[in-house]
Length: 355
Image 1 (spheres, one colour):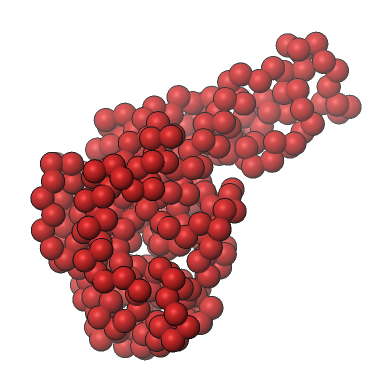
Image 2 (cartoon, rainbow, N blue to C red):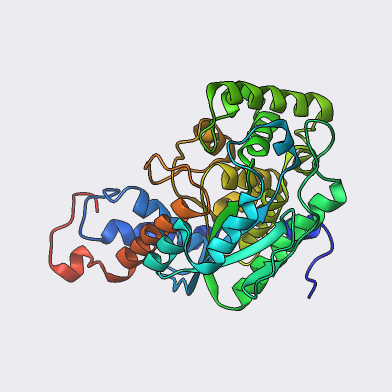
């Protein structure tokens, strides 16, 4: 099944939010039995959802977290505390329902869809979606992580998956990922787009030592110097210092936005994909909902660069989509406020002066 041919076609279908629906949502919120704005972020989400869907209290349908997996050639530089084979081992754990994201998704009543975007090996499982572009990226410290064609193919795969899932009833998406070493390309993406030093962008990832962190920063600096990614060309950045699962998530975000579906953005790696998607299609930002501020150094800089406002601060840094799935509860709460809360008139309560 093929929906699109290229990046320009993917981004062209992303429309601005429905401002009329957002105004109606704000007017409704201001009539509810509470001081104006007193539900804070929940009110912001309610207005955003109205802009995305055109409805004041939308039925979100199926909730789906898409966990995209890929390996990274840069791991040969010693940037991670874990070996690369943990990627495919954890994918099997996702498919067996035993990972943290599975537990939290069950708690939220959400589906977990696991996708092989670039695992360095063959994982055979009936529940795994095979969208493999290649067996892991190349070592970005020595050469481009992907060719531009490979990066575009990964974005396209993510985009088309979003359209497929939306057609099957998914009304609320979340981003998830698995890829040993993937905080390194994510930090490189932040440094390339934001003009931020690798030392500020890079964190401890899986819990690396001081010595390994110094090496990680050196590797990111080397990757940027070797590849010279052009921040004015988002696909150039993604291809040169990105990852296959990051590219897939970039496409997933663009596809959700094209389908006018909200997508909850997880932590550091997912936000690197969100920043790339926002650079490719600024209108896509309106469809993104920030979930949590990761414990990973650099995430605060990354969410600011991407224009995302996280709701939760739980010091989490696991990835997988765990924070995004927790935020599903808050998104649903915002819908319930719009659908179920009484207005001042309905409750017979005197409103505030000026309302």
